[in-house]
Amino acid sequence: MNEFDKWNKIKQKIHNKWQKQFYVKQREIWYINLWINIWDEENWKNNDFRRPVLVLKKVWSLYLCLSMTSKGKDENYFYYKFKNNSYVILSQVKSIDRKRFLDKYETMDKQNFKEIKKRLKTMWF
Image (cartoon, rainbow, N blue to C red; front, side, top):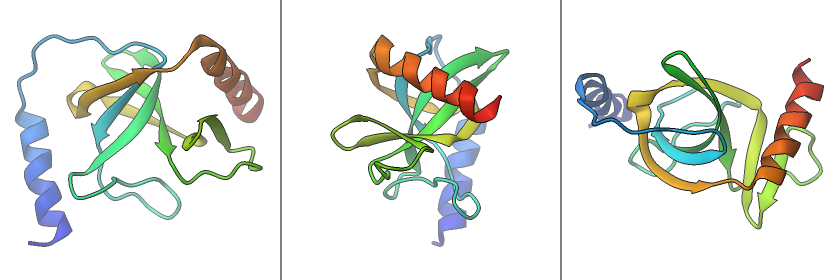
């Protein structure tokens, strides 16, 4: 089975999934379902189409999130390092539907989140 067929099965489950009520808040880091992107956009990790994201804000039924990676670049303005091997990719803001959220990983501390928001404002506005 090729990658597209695997993803298509997961996507159908996501689309038809009934979810119990749960809440996603700012500063939380979640694993989400994510498939192939283009060029330098972050794709899934491993074989289960999961990618960690940092939740920035809720907008209607969507969430603005930043992709995360363990292979960031320390001297690059587009990456924010907040742990030993965890980077937030500031150039990759994504809108994510709640059905894509899988598991909460942790909550980022307020100081790092504040710094990320500050850098995003400088970068984008």
